[in-house]
Amino acid sequence: MRQDMIVILDMGSTENTVLARAIRDLGVYSEIHPHDITMEELARLENVKGIILNGGENRIVDGQPVEVRPELYHCGCPVMAADHPTAKCEQKLDALPDEETLKEFVFGKCKAEANWNMKNFIEDQVELIRRQVGDKKVLLALSGGVDSSVVAAMLLKAIGNQLTCVHVNHGLMRKHESEDVVEVFKNQLHANLIYVDATERFLGKLDGVADPEQKRKIIGGEFIRVFEEEARKLDGIEFLGQGTIYPDIIESGTKTAKMVKSHHNVGGLPEDLQFELVEPLKQLFKDEVRACGIELGLPADMVYRQPFPGPGLGVRCLGAITRDRLEAVRESDAILREEFAAAGLDEKVWQYFTVVPDFKSVGMKNHERSFDYMVIIRAINTIDAMTATVEKVDWDVLEKITDRILAEVGNVNRVCYDMSPKPPATIEFE
Image (cartoon, rainbow, N blue to C red; front, side, top):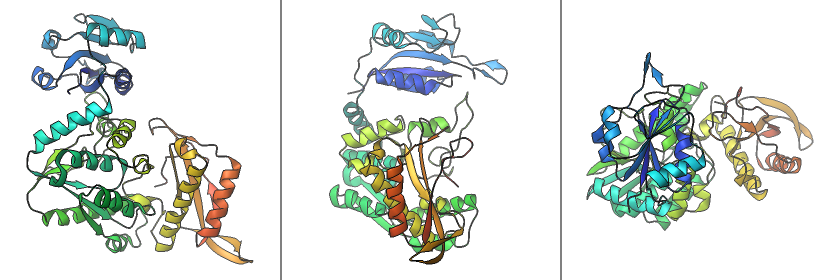
């Protein structure tokens, strides 16, 4: 069933997502769209029950106030202005509406139904995917991360063997991550999965490269090349599946807000892309993506997997990547995740991982002098990843993690805990 929708028009507010989430929390679907949406674009949105003009500190652009198209006031839907003085609105507010005001507008004036839930969302997306793709084929780069895994499960439900997934193991994955992808998608869900072990290829390209940005470019560029090589071996591919989610689109900039950071799946695609995109998660927030994955039947440990940077462990093996330090990162990260899960911290801490710097320190191992690497543990909490606080891990837990890393990970004689919030530090080291 198509869900009722409240449209939020971005009139310069920095809290569009807060409002969107508040409406979705009421059980009603909401989407954010540009202030200058045309009537034709509005008409293409199904089941629109009401419109909120959401103004704010960015409502003056290039010296001019942002305004909606005049005909929008005659679209047949109730219109409310939040923090935006507009004479033609049925209701005007000086700030974001409180819960009762929002309920009155959404359910009272707009007569919307509270039919926004994951089961309905999946049914709608399956129908839309089938309508878009028809009998054609879709190609998906399946990294094993949450977003690509949920997209793969959604596409499998919608079009089955019309989907081909390519998983590229660049040698910078977490412990057992590639094996998990193969097990779930090939062995359990019976997807058409192409597995490419490109470890030697990637590590060869990265040999001696210490600059973080250069490492990222090499990893990203080589990934695209490997993916393209596999795509050329296939016939009849007309669509490219992507795990774009709502924050990717929002952070890549709007007409009234500057870009926070570019996302490869929003602004980084080549202009001459030969595929049409299929992006069934592009209106979901991260927690909604996870809920979608659970509803689709994916394993909880895959759906609630830790956030992972695109370059993988390549930016946690600091400086020029060496195989011994890469292995130290992989093994120490696995120990950290095991012990956080055992202590119940995996459901409390937003992100946690280890890094290994490219220098050694003096220590003692097996009753003799050692000159080995250190492992740094990072554990932080955040709401939006723009700021972050450090998790105050119980001392006994830290001691157990430290003991295991020093005993089980080779070439390591020291474990440190990063106490730096963001800002001034960033979440990742590189």
